[in-house]
Amino acid sequence: LLGKHTILSDDCSGSESTNESFSKKLMYDHSSTDSCPKSFLFHVREALLSMTPYARALTVAVGVGLFCGIFAIMYEFVLFGSLQFVWRDLGPRLMPADYEWAWIPIVCIFFGGITGVLLSVMGEPLENLVGTVLEFHRDGRLPYDDSHTMAATSITSIIAAGSLGPEAPLVAIGGGVASGFADLFSLSADETHIITIAGMS
Image (tube, rainbow, N blue to C red; front, side, top):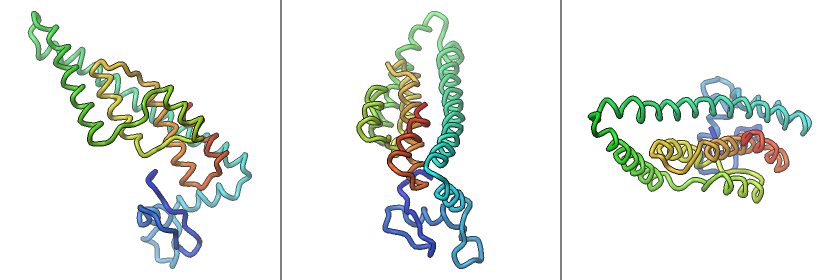
């Protein structure tokens, strides 16, 4: 949904894009018998573009806020559920009582290694909360290409007792998703700035 896309015209054509065919699937319903069938997403975009800039920004901000809020709840559920399972439930089951201390280096080394593998395979995301905010002030938006990387590596890093909290990942992911929605619905730079703040919040 948030990959590079093409904004399509009324004749179902679009400019060149690395993901043009996927964009057409988003904007057009190819299961329809119409010559140029429109998808639900296309109608949402057209409705937004017909609004005043203030109403459009407010509408998308509310939608993005709800979406990112639901994602934040899911993230926290997965994060704290994983922490509880690994540190409180799994350790006592696998380690003898006299050697429970050994569970600490085992978990840190194992999940630290997984974090390193994820960074090597998926690429490095934004650095930290300060770096995320600085990038937003510099560009007026946040990248959404590495949201999945930030989510995965932050969870494994926190489980490994790394010096990372959920604040930076949630701000970066929320802001990136919001910037992606702004691109998808062809919002202006000023509107993108507002929507990204809503996602970060």
